[in-house]
Image 1 (tube, one colour):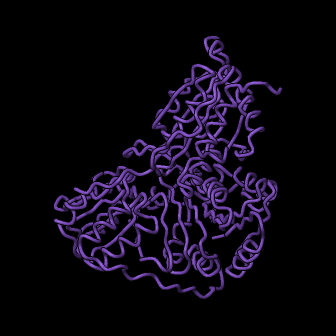
Image 2 (cartoon, rainbow, N blue to C red; image 1 turned 180 degrees about the vertical axis):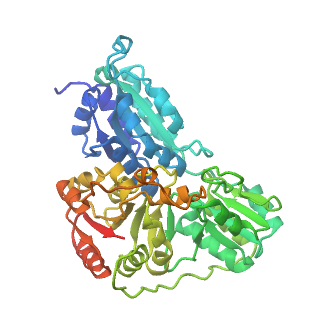
Image 3 (cartoon, rainbow, N blue to C red; image 1 turned 90 degrees about the vertical axis):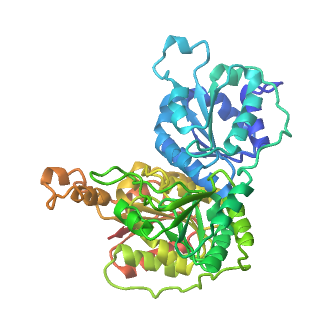
Length: 521
């Protein structure tokens, strides 16, 4: 019903859009109806329905990584927020700016302990850097500005940049008070520390030095500055194992990636005399293993900090390169598109075909499974941005691809997914179809949680028993990915051979909307 003066929900949404929020990833319920009505009257905010809250939060993560500005989620009470926790965990690890708006029962209704009553703040705190429950309708406009400011405020790891605002229903329906529309917002990254740059410069870089990078050090400017340093000093440059975003490809310096397993990391670090952290944390084992250390940095390796994740790592690298007299640019990758392979499909041949056919300036969102194997081939062949599984909570890749496509509608987005992880959040396909997003999904179908096979054998067990194997097996029944995608409005094809995959990828790239390829590897 139209009102003469705005209610709290209207002032909330108005403040969010005034603060630069353009997209709302929503799975609303009864408590959010006044906010839905306010969104209906706000053309500046694009509402995007997601059929599972984990898609909302994962898409907001992908959007924030690509835009550097927050999207908002609109979720229903504590249960809805809880359904989105896994991808909020990934977003926190990525340092992604993100605003959650969570509907709550009216203040007077909470003491009655209705079935959906929950400790929303308690659910939010482990994945949020800022949590607030609004108490009055006329504070909502200011609360919304504060939420966006909190999402953009630089905070050290592991705090993240997620702001969660809980909105009781009576605050949404009560009379609101518009907030000033010209409030200033913080810069996302804190200025780098000149003293840290001077300290690293004084220590010196050489062939025994490793630059380990994450955060905005992995934007184009940071990668170029790291390339200058490598050319000048002979140091090595690596990303963390699962960086939030990497700008990579021809025309940029080559950059490697720290491996996953602890013994592999220890081997990489064994010859490192000085480890320089740029937006990264010192390497630790992803999990604890018997008779293996958690801290993987050798005791005799000197560890220096150039910049924290919440600081301008790219600027720090450029300043260090200047201080050390580095040239204007280091060597860059020359584009080499591989020949199309033939025969039976494998993880390697999928990588080669992607590298041969992917368009320049694409975006890749990966999850568990074989997608990460495409990193080296793609780096040699095509300019792209890569979004990795930062927090290890699978089910991120598809939703993150949706968010990236919303943030960058002029770029092709690939979602490279293992079949197990893709089932966690397969509803992203429906949203991609609804919004007609250019998302090309590749599902690596091996019908098993392959990493668990590896981990089980690392226990020293040579044969996996039938009962144990059943917990890694994704057959009986088999998942028909092409049919599953079609049921959600996404066309697709199954590929058993390289020729099948190349043809399907050609169709996907020629279409204007989403497409799925089930790659039998």
